[in-house]
Image (tube, rainbow over all chains, first blue to last red):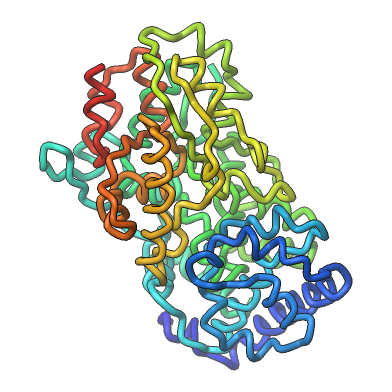
Length: 175
Length: 288
């Protein structure tokens, strides 16, 4: 099974979409009840200053049920997950969780995942970690790796085949 | 001696060696023993945008492994710490997800019950070891350098999930730094993000974020910048020169891990604290 299956098998991901849709539905109910558009989330948003993400607008659009439009918008991928919106909301709404759910839905719908996410996903599936041991350069221009420093072996999934099967099954919701 | 399993995560054991070296060198001096556990995987946090279910599973898997070894965990990366804490919270509250995860864990011969306690470097040092205990072990205190502290977003927020430090006015690292002789001051940008989470899909903006924070720190005359997160350190230390370019400033802020400083103060062998891997200008700090 390849990365492609994981990100584009729309049919196999029916169950998964159901779960995300339920999550969104619950979030939508929450915001409808609680968010009064004070925009405190946007005033502290780290991504707002540089990339013009406006969490309160995302919340407003979700309230109106414009989920398809949101899922297809590039702006949802600009969140820095600094979690200030969640922390500071006077009504305990979590715009950051809404953004996570929207991004999850975009992926489950088979939309192209931006940037290096695919590479990270591939690495976690094959190695169990986001990257393998890197060669670093010291101040004296000497290149060193983990074992040169006397550090113990890297802790990673021992039985990678079982690990892969487990995680793939879960991702594709065929349990 | 207190015993903890070390959950290294991904970034620290694969490139942020100075954090790992200094942790392993410093904690035994304070009667804390770290136990290596094989078979750990990623905590799942970097994949939360792609598939949250996968994040929960990866976290649960690591927690179940710790249970198998009957150990509480030291989680030095704030991002991993949040992922694992959040996983515990979700599995307690959501039976449906709990069941799904349990079934999948069985295929890896693991069982999750949720009894593992989690510690980050900061609360382990401040709450478990204690500042008074640290004071007793100090061999070479620092001279009073004006120090800026960076906690990292995932260590601070969200309070809702339960975090080791106060979200709006964290002072635990400051207390430790004062104990070893340094002079930490608050600054307006203290709670701001380092930019690292955007490295994945907006690398330039991510560096601008880093640059802006370091520029503010430099302008305010700080002589030292302390962090406790491998992601933040990667941005502030390894990429400092590049970050400076994004804000058109020559940045020269010495950036070090809290554990590196503590190691020096507690009399550990300086050569074993990984200072040669810091890319920021730290020479001045070590000569003094």
